[in-house]
Image 1 (tube, rainbow, N blue to C red):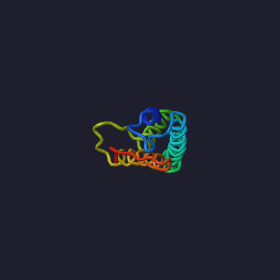
Image 2 (cartoon, helix red, strand yellow; image 1 turned 30 degrees about the vertical axis):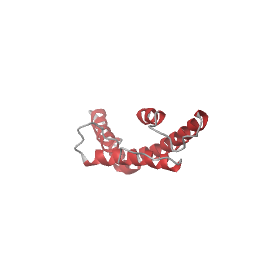
Image 3 (cartoon, rainbow, N blue to C red; image 1 turned 90 degrees about the vertical axis):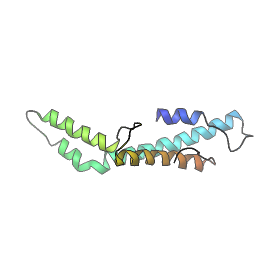
Length: 120
């Protein structure tokens, strides 16, 4: 979210070159609100809804060594839900995650009357 916010702070150009600084800030804040709301929805779906059975397994461990087993299970859930994004992405789920986030940003910009160039 921080990287997205910084990216939104520095648009290459404006669809409406007549917009003053206050209008631009209002537009960016609206985009930011839309993006963060939708990212939280994605996070809830990817972290909780899509992995409910795995969470139940994680919290079902008990006895000696259960904290290690629970931590391992939770790490697997986190890695599946929000994979690490790097320049050497070779995992389809990582690319799908990135595409979903990019799509959210593009849609929010377009809903506010803008366009996004250079990312797909």
